[in-house]
Length: 135
Image (cartoon, rainbow, N blue to C red; front, side, top):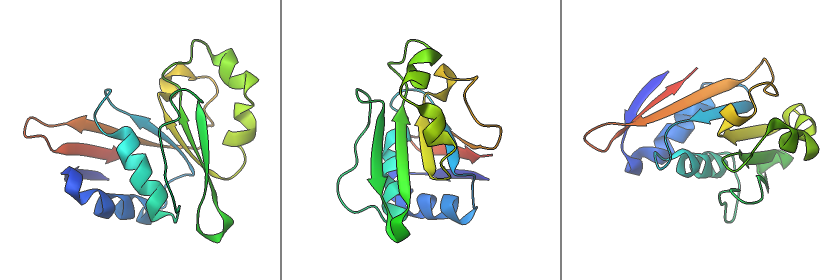
């Protein structure tokens, strides 16, 4: 799936992503500042999270409860120095929990990603819109 969108269309984009039935482990790729965290916040809202969501840049993972007792884990591995740090925090328990796992900077843990996952790549276009690919 490919979508070109502006920030004011995030709600619609999140609904389209969920309607595609992606795998519950989703890797988010894109340059810093392209809108990965903003999209994840909207996905959380679309899945029924009530309340504030934020980037787990310093905590590495945030946990949210959504509709129907679903759990969403949001990871930000930007500050991770080595894969062992993710193992130390019990990443396998999260990734194989059958809960939503939204992962920013997954390239920091390439050997730990489950075979079954989806990928969202976001890039910024010259006109300020974003190009999103879900695979």
